[in-house]
Amino acid sequence: WLFPGGIVSMRSLSRSMLQPEDYVHVLGPKLSPLDELRSVCHATGQEDAFYLCNVDDVVHKMELWRQLLPRVRPHYAVKCNASRVVLNTLAALGAGFDCASKGEIEEVLSLGVDPSRIIFAQPAKPATHIRFAAGRGINLATFDNEEELYKMRALHPKCRLVLRIRCDADDATYCLGIKYGCDAERDAPRLLRTARDLGLQVVGVSFHVGSGCREEHVYRRAVRAARHVFDVAEGLDIRGMRLLDVGGGYPGDPEAEPVFRKMAEAINSSVAEFFPSPDVDVISEPGMYFVSSAFTLAANVHSKREVRSEAGDLESVMYYINDGAYGSFIEAVLDTKRFRGVPLEAHGESCDAVPSSVWGPTCDGTDKVEDGNLLPPLELGSWLLYHNHGAYTVALATGFNGLPTPKVHAVVSTSTWSQLRDRAPFTESHFVPSLATGRRHTSASLADPHPCV
Ligand code: PLP
Image: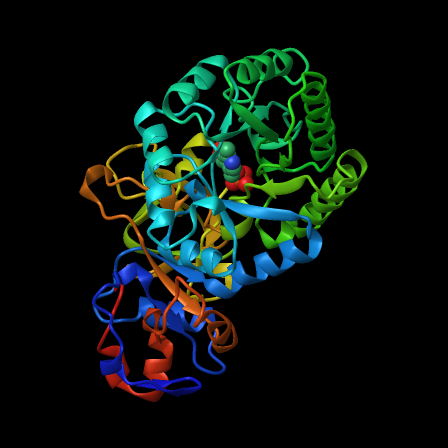
């Protein structure tokens, strides 16, 4: 095989253990993720919707995080996008993981990640999941109510516990406080006392200000409330409070980077003010931040219908694509986000653009992706791209109507490949030439492996 940067013998590599979604396609020199996306779209027989994941983007996010929040160790919220390439990349970069269930814990441990890098960040855990965590050495978990304390006492008494408090952003897409998090003033003292009396070890405080947060000030309010809980614990003679978990909520789209920078400043200054001692570890649970911009969805236009006036004039076009509300676009139904598909190949001049709606593939009338988009005329078989589509998309896709969920095709630049190739859980075997590289250099390198197409 001709790899960018060297010759690698295909036979010397053991690929038998790897699944298609494990492969990362190394882009040849001067090739971009968009070149690879085009190559996948144009591969023979390719019709299914798929994701292109740009691993460089995830790596960039980690670099930015470390630069802006050097005291805060991120624990990636697996629920946001559990694609193998994301977990492998973040594990290789030394991230911790926020797991919400037995299944997520199992997945992360299967990568060889040490249990000490996992927080079981779910305040209401089924008993079987607690037993599983106890058996696998997951010794850090959140709680926000008494019943959970009794369960933990019975099933995992050695677990270090983190009290989740409620502090909601005024401006966020999803409020999590309606479901989780106790009141720091009213409930925390009672819960801390109960934990102490049960002989349980409470080691810190967590919060989640809400997903898709758009304001930075809430982080200061939350850190101050956490300080209050630390002080209450001290008054109750609870020693060993050493962990502050500043949760998630950070945006991940490129245009939201200024907001993220302001959030980082708010966290840094409030942590410095309220938790000046370096003995307090600060962690976080970002989901959206790490994956949103790394993923582009490519969906195929398989059908269309023209809508005409009685006089026969074209009023609009309805396009049907092979991903929708029951796949990667749940937010279209929840009405929490507006989507705008971008044609892979522009056809005609912009003056040809026609008001268009885009519909998902199921028989459900609510399965609509977008409306009112001015799109150039699209032929059947055209591709629509949805950028910044990595957060709570592929993770929520169902197989409703017997339709496949999109697979992930991952790419990496040669420079990032050279950073990651020796870092567990990656091995040399994970990396294969990009389809675009194959097109340019030799058709033989397209032969195998051939994930997700
Ligand atoms: N932590 C917990 C406990 C969550 O419930 C969530 C999202 O639901 C996250 C972290 C990730 O949040 P975000 O994707 O907004 O960063």
